[in-house]
Image (tube, rainbow, N blue to C red; front, side):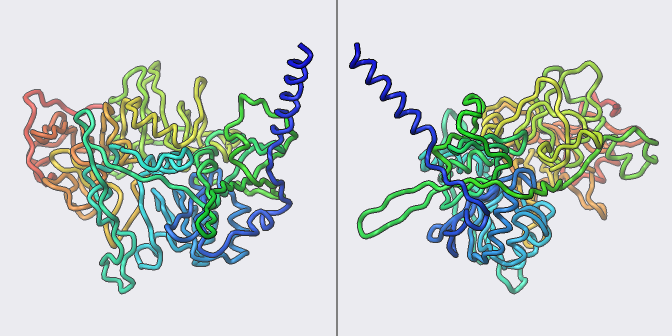
Amino acid sequence: NNTLQQSLAYAVRRTSNLSSGSVEICKTADDALRDIPDGARLLVGVVVVDAVNVVCILEGFGLCGIPENLISALQRRGVNDLTCVSNNAGVDDFGLGLLLQTKQIKRMISSYVGENKEFERQYIGGELEVELTPQGTLAERVRAGGAGIPAFYTPTGYGTIIHKGGAPIKYKKDGSGEIEIGSEPREDRIFNGIPYIMETAITGDFALIRAWKADTAGNLIFRKTARNFNAAMARAAKVTIAEFLFATDVYVSLSQVEEIVEVGALDPDTVHVPSAYVDRIFKADHMEKRIERLTLARNSGEPPAPGSSAAKRELIVRRAAKEFKDGMFVNLGIGMPMLASNFIPKGMSVALQSENGVLGLGPFPTEEEVDPDLINAGKETVTTLPGSSFFGSDDSFAMIRGGHIDLTVLGAMQVSQFGDLANFMIPGKMVKGMGGAMDLVSAPGSRVVITMEHCAKGGAHKILSECTLPLTGPRCVNRIITEMGVFDVCPERGLTLMEIAPGLSVDDIEASTGAPFTVSDNLIEMSV
């Protein structure tokens, strides 16, 4: 018995000693980044990747959860030729946009260019390599990398340029719009009758992330939607050192935290990233936590003028809101689709999911409710409703790919008569990135509804026999709602006009539509 008690006491002492971990607490961001060389692959509120050079992963979503002090320190150090893996690149003058301004980034692996004009300019001008990756695929590639899984199959991107190859990674600098470096095609297989493509994992040499709290052992806790990609990327950073015939892998994650507490102060049940993944932490003296799109609740004002663009959009989103059913889980895309949330019928329970890691979105906040750690996928400030939950981007897209979202509402540049969707780029001219749209439209069991103005500026058709722009997804659209009417879409039979706006005729619809369609025997007037 004495021997057993002594052994147990020794085990407890040993476990207690180990729980403190080996994390290094750095005084400054510059000290934390002291050994990042040129050509590094970084995981930092973004991830930096290169097959030969060091890669850093730097995480965040828009400006929410980015390690702003670490990024600024990277800029000061002048480290060059970085390959960065990140959902996006911040804005022109903040976040990774700073490293773009100083031309320190060689390649971005991202899902979304968004409103960063310098990002778009460098990419289209052939100055920057960009590997556009669907947001859910990006999250899963990083998660797989941290879990030691070299590759996986996903339905996302099947039938698109992600699958077929040839997506522009780098354009020629002569302004011709010709591709200098194109993407490689993906291997594909069919499982249970569903086509999938193979994606490989992502790891980085260093991960630069931002946490809310850390203890001196290196355990991390994130706050609200600032978790996004941070937790997955903290697990995926890798430094490989090779000497002669022997190589060893060392995982190095650098975390910028808002509060450091002693070991034992954090409830183990609340830890998002265990200390085994974290090597260095430092407490920042200042954190701006800039908000990209401050969006506030507004009292309903005067209705839009009849015939105006605002009136068209309101008609579309009011009609889109009729797609909601009680108890649904719904994802609303950026822009017009998100406005449909303003018209959820009273008494109906609809849980709104956002790709950046929240289920149960509420209305826009008042000035007093604004929280920079709480945004939607459009980077707008939001609130949450009772019963809501927060999670990482990898869990968010597991929810989507797993078929747990009932309805997706998105915008579009073009839709074909058989339901092909194009909504993320005009090659050589404009690129926003696919964000999470490819994942959403490829998710089994989810209904996809498109909301858009019937014609583009100048009257060009947006509903076509065949899309001329790169596809977000083939034969994935179930319904199209415009200010002129509502079409159902069948991947075999094509378009059927189900509803028509007041004051319009079928001839009016035909003149504005670049694809054949049939008219339902039960055609009704579009109502909201």
